[in-house]
Length: 133
Image 1 (cartoon, rainbow, N blue to C red):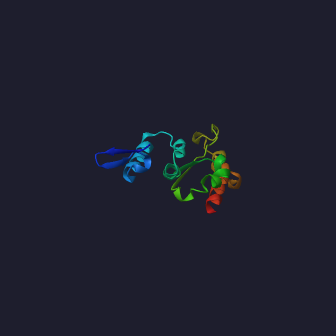
Image 2: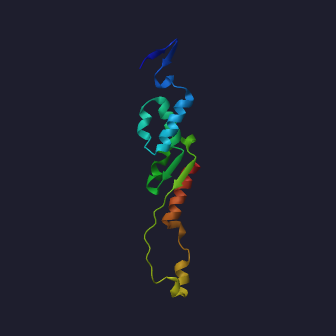
Image 3: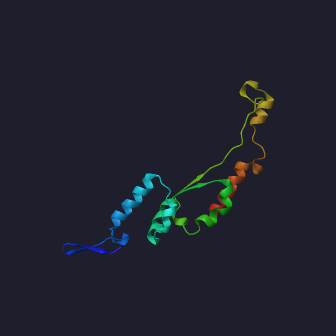
């Protein structure tokens, strides 16, 4: 785009010609709109930086993505402010340990054992190991 003459002033009609405040308002409006912002990072280097700041501020992480986590955030680690660690639990339908069946078997069912091999413990151990680096 080119400059447009408005009376005696020149107005730059390019993205860089907009005041910084206006550009930030556009980014905020896009973020509030709920649209996917990641494809917009290819518009320009400035868009990429601002959108990465937004996209990496809140990360949703699952155990299956833990192995790739370091490579995903290597360049943008400073932008990460919040990690939402999502664990999917197996379905549970146990009628014999229902509280109405109180007794020794019920107490045994509630006892915590073998936590070293529990998927939840393993997932958190892996997460904290990655975060410690």
